[in-house]
Amino acid sequence: MTPTIISPAGTVTNMTPNYEVRLLLDPDAVLSPKLELADTVLSTFHVASTIKMNVQFLDTCSKDIYTAGWSARIRKAENDGLELTYKKRYAISGVEIDAALTTDRLLVKLRKEDALA
Image: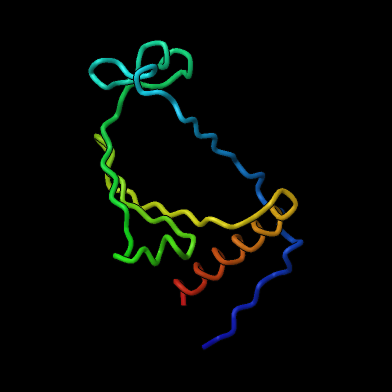
């Protein structure tokens, strides 16, 4: 097996992370009687028309993947093909974000190199 050589972390800068904001909303206030988003919500948040989507989460019965910080799922959107998505969650605080992004970038690079080997 050939050793994997990783270039110094300083040669490529990390992406600026995107942040996701989740809101806990009262269903009675945001849903119509048909259980669809109310018109006021659609217009306020500039939401596109509804797309039906099925999502299947992948894990073991004991949630080993989730416990390891991963979330893997298969998505099937209306009029679209299957999509495998995965997300890695790192325990980080504000000052550690850059280090976590560097770690993630290096892990992704290793996985790609292993796949090509």
